[in-house]
Amino acid sequence: MEKLEQLYEGKAKKVFRTSDPEKLIVSYKDDATAFNGLKKGTIAGKGVINNKMSNLLMQMLEKAGVPTHFVEELNDRETVVKRVSIVPLEVIIRNISAGSFAKRYGVKEGIVFDSPTIEFSYKNDELGDPLINAYHALALKLATEEEIETIKRYAFKVNEELKRFWLSCGVTLVDFKLEFGRLSDGTIVLADEISPDTCRLWDVKTGEKLDKDRFRRDLGGVEDAYKEVMNRLMNNI
Ligand code: UDP
Image (cartoon, rainbow, N blue to C red; front, side, top):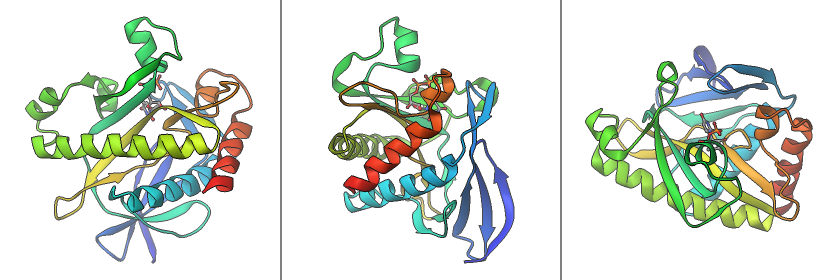
């Protein structure tokens, strides 16, 4: 598949057109941002890890019945994906309190929920990705009722699959963010990435953070944490 001109450069990835109008090539960068782009840095080797990890997890989810944008890994940093129009919602599932949830509701991190929660943010950098509910999403015509139902069903399915898989790696899946897209025929598929950039992953025994919070919170050992979760995934897949 031939890589043609760059269509878009995001915070962590570049997207290229291909000769097939229904396919794109994504290229994962080592750039890292946090706090809506306020904090910037690089995490050496992150792009290679996120590319491979996301592709392996998406293939696992496909087998479990969740359609994804994944087509084919080209090399260390590049993957062919189906072209979608992104539903402008960040879909966040939580199993344990952390991050903005803990801050917003004034609770400590690490409270294990009886059942997972779901929330949506409106993907809009200028507004700082505000929290919205399904009614707001409908009012803003970000998605249809049917699409929101499909997205919720897939998101909870992804949680069940990923929770079980990460546990087998000695990792607790605390929370994560998903993005969905529409194919040209309207089919909803899981898009974007699933990686330590978009998931909170804690060591089951020690509670050590093995994800982007090491970068966000200047905890050090960022590269090693990404390598550690990738090694555990490779040993259990
Ligand atoms: N997340 C993400 N991108 C965002 C916001 C959140 O990938 O723009 C992920 C984050 O890594 C975490 C989960 O979604 O795994 C929940 O994040 P939270 O709402 O707690 O926000 P944060 O504390 O990261 O600002």
